[in-house]
Length: 233
Image 1: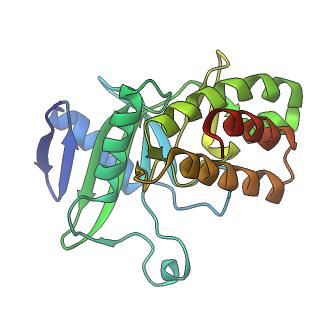
Image 2: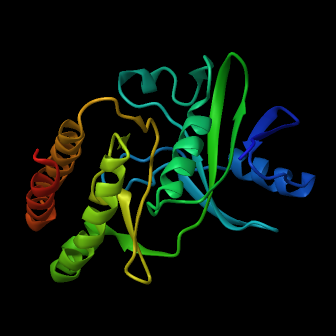
């Protein structure tokens, strides 16, 4: 699908669809009043805002913020060298949707500034009930059932050699129909190593989050058993 690049005031938008000036005005307004980053580790949505945009419906706007020590000096700006953070995540989302993985529908990416820029990603809002982390705390038996879908979807990512660098129960949303959706594919990419190494990497990150935040052990025990069986971790 071809990408359309459109300049609107000081912003540049990229999308596979075209937008009216009214829609772009609404999106820019959302960018300007966007919430700041959160310290929540398992929330997965700390830099996210939602709104209704005419003709697009309910959208989610994500702004990119730096982590680590550098955030104390430069919270929002990146040096543009090739693709922006928003464009890379937009393209990863297109890829994972094409292989049948449940993830947010990418609508557009945008950036402002050069060579140092701020970046945003616009996706369609998922009709979610709660994160898997929240569900596991409130209803472990229900979370156990949902885990079957998580493992099935994760196996698709592994088989197609797609790395989600921060997949944990807070980045898995459960919708009103008990379907799961992986979110936050920032820095996601194609993986060049062996499938068993990719599966092991996913398992290691997942288990670390479960243990650190004292979530039910079954969240990693089920995944560990299934992935070892399929990918010989």
